[in-house]
Image (tube, rainbow, N blue to C red; front, side, top):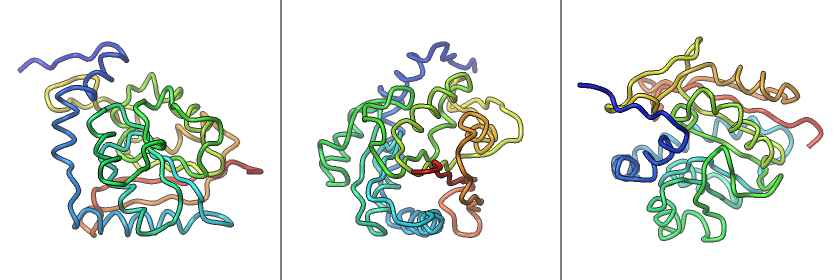
Length: 216
């Protein structure tokens, strides 16, 4: 079966805005078992914050906010979200995960928040769905809106490569995202990193990195 080729950045965004994104949303509905695993993962990541907890946390590509729902039980921080699928944004608001003013329709290359809007800005399983050519732009946007910390939780590959994803090309990419961040924003300080292994109780097998902006 021939793959559907997503040739442009707009094609790739439309994939997540439309029926494909709606189906992804439904497949990833909140389940307590997943939220329990995510709470354990975020407790580990948050333990690496250098001197104080984050007062505000922004997820780029939040979907239904599984990570934000897990964070809600770990922190009193103000939670913010950016997501291209309007149905997912509505659900975030309706479920009380994020206040209406803090949930915005958008994407990583043009984040609709001000400079330094959140103490901690992160992606989880989102950079993998952004084209390799667009990763640097997303890193720079996240760096712009992050006041102090940046976290990245993604699948890993030593070399950048594409993998077919549910009948599409141009929809799933792997690389060393930690090195991407350090090469794109070399002033960042690596605070912690690790690996969540699905077989040992992780929600999925993913690498993670936590960075801090010096002098923040």
